[in-house]
Length: 336
Image (cartoon, rainbow, N blue to C red; front, side):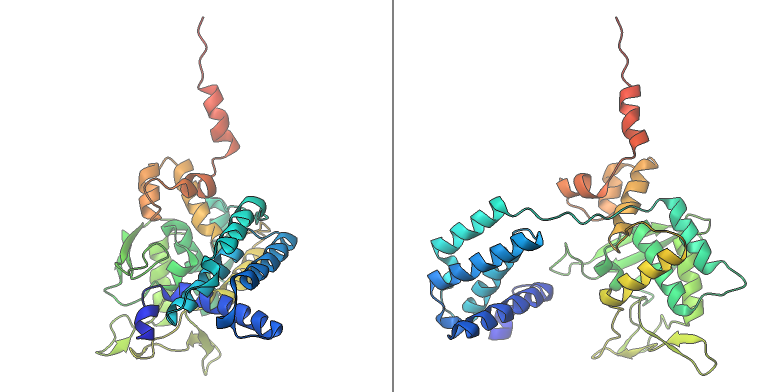
């Protein structure tokens, strides 16, 4: 029964809720009582402490909202009313929304030229062939840029021939079985075209398949695994995939964000790119480059799977250059 209730929310949501519930439980233990015996006034005190901590650290109201939702969810699991549903808790959440202003993380965008510099530095030096891990990470960055992929999307790119179709010299057809905006796991298809040149995503994926000896046609009951996965040194010293296939009951895990982000940062610095770039920056950079290059905004939005009337797409992802914005003024013709 409990598992049925939990299945009503996404696994990622429960990971956040469980962490927030553990934090709340520890706080209650420090006050000397069971979390399920928490009175509304006490819950309000907890939210007030979270609000003050968020203000000191420049965090927005999401911490307070997540804590409230987590406590309510866990109370629902045992069939009890949540103290976070009390008007006093609602008042504190509203106050947090009005007063907490998060510090914006400054993330810069990569241009397509910088992406090509990145690729050339790590993959095209004949005197220093790249390791399998470096080839994998660089290829993943190119896919995130050209396919407008979030990190979670990238980690769900599976190499099975039915989930990642390769049309040599033409396109990649990626089936994402789940994403941030697809909690019901309806699936989404992403097409990434061949671009030619150093950063052609189709060519890079084909080269990665060859270098890693991926098995894209697993046997019955086998998992072919994700594109981004762990590597290990072989007997000859060269890197190879740690797992080529695995039982479906124990699928091959994707490389975690905690590993990918610092490694990508290192690789960018090594290539002389000192911009503050996160893994999500490749998605925003690709969207901006596409719009700046003349792509239809609607098609860019559809490729990145943004909602039809998404304000986030225009406000946070597409950043026109100063030259483009200046062209608006130049286009104005004043006639007497």
